[in-house]
Image (cartoon, rainbow, N blue to C red; front, side, top):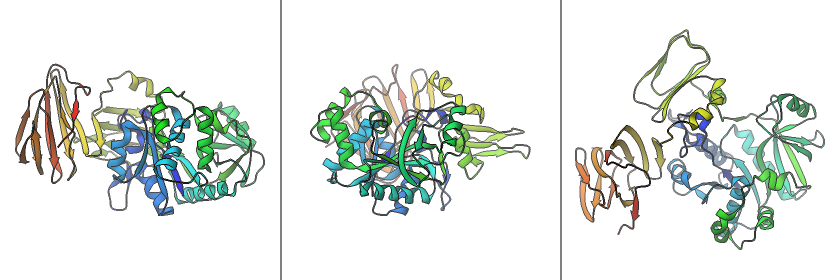
Length: 437
């Protein structure tokens, strides 16, 4: 099974755990069998492997998420990265070109495309295999997975099937409706459009060629910034006449808000948190190193991270986006392919960060024009290189870099350090990368 997982968006409705780099699919909130936690992307990736150990998985994403994907799924995962955002159609087209030109997949093979973040069980992934099999039969150019509508939602588009068969032609698509219209669609047998479909790889490439001329993956990548934003539904699905839908009656949840996410949580408290017996329907998700106490609350979510603190009625929490957009959106926590960093303190002229590097990994060899930096190693061991001079470092060592110094650190074991940035101008743009020999 060739599968393209669409991973994008900032997920601001799950602030303060999500930001422009750390989208909702990277939040580790689901309990694993070994007592740890996994994210949505880790959960879905694991479930695919359990359903089909030989599945060829490609993650379609933006450049800002590459490090987080490698951090959570490993260095070997195949990634098709957009150089800039162009909506779902071009993300799929670029991934299709990646499969053909980089991975050597035949255009005659089928591919299934789905979002990376649905909350589903094993039957969903078995349905994806059935969807691929249906696409391989060639009865239609495009086969959709229609989600059984659990209630008249205004959040989803609707697929109206031609009849009540398990696999049937699509009569029409309907955009996100009012609740009243949604009830009418459901009465007509309407299914939620969960953005899942299967087709021949060559079909996707042909549809992309109809929109713009390109020779291969590299050519499309280089032309990417000239393309017009357009979704797959508008560009292809709503215009296709040879199209089928397969019904999926199993569990499917879009965990895009705190209200829906907490419904899927197996425990009420993640991280340091305590609530009294008077609390009802309360969830605490705390990534900070300080405790949270909740008393006498009803239907409330409390979440704390370096980005901020949220205390909200669960129903009201889905309307937070304009408030979050108005805040200072400086990234205060991010997972990278080499490890992670967390901002501890910000003052005028200084910033303090805790950095964790995985064993065997390193930062880029880089310099800053406008700030000095001081590293204090708090655990682990490794090597630093400052303007070409290498030295071993371990717990308690302090390394100072003046503005303009080229520097990096290489972790031999897991290495944790405190980085203090000092300067009148502290900005993520103040970084020049160099080749490290």
